[in-house]
Length: 180
Ligand SMILES: [Ca+2]
Image 1 (cartoon, rainbow, N blue to C red):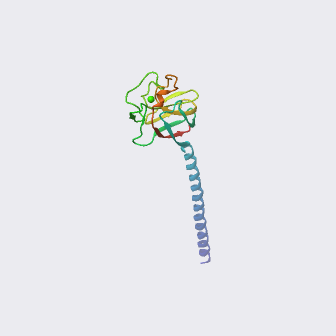
Image 2: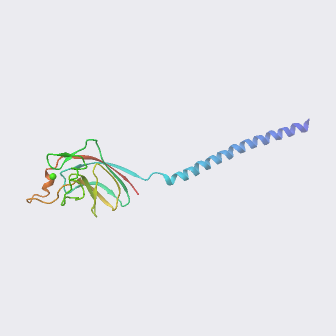
Image 3: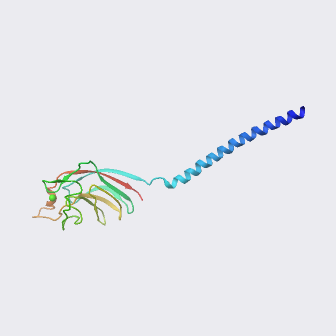
């Protein structure tokens, strides 16, 4: 009788220790799993993104700075806000930020873009950009981002940039810069 009771108590103690041992092992294992999952998540965290809002005026030349400095390799989205956004580069004919359809002219600020298309450049190297209503690109140079309307920048009758003077309207622009 005596022997049986003792062995029974020992068995209970062993069971108790085994139970807590399993719990502690599970907790340590759990912490380890959490830590390792964080380590695997870290390299996949999203890169830093900056969102800006600005206005661009059709009659402004030289173009106004957006005060946004981009760096070579940054991914950039330029989005004109508003479904019916429009401006005017003739004084009498509105157009979307994509400009007057298929109206490209030599001597314009950007000859490969439509007349009155939203265009821009990145200073100091002055890399020219076609934007229109929406554009997504990787910056090929570093510098300040300038935006404006594509029109004729030549001087006329001693009036500086007179072809910009009849332009009307402005666009609300959202710019997203995702750092490389
Ligand atoms: Ca004009």
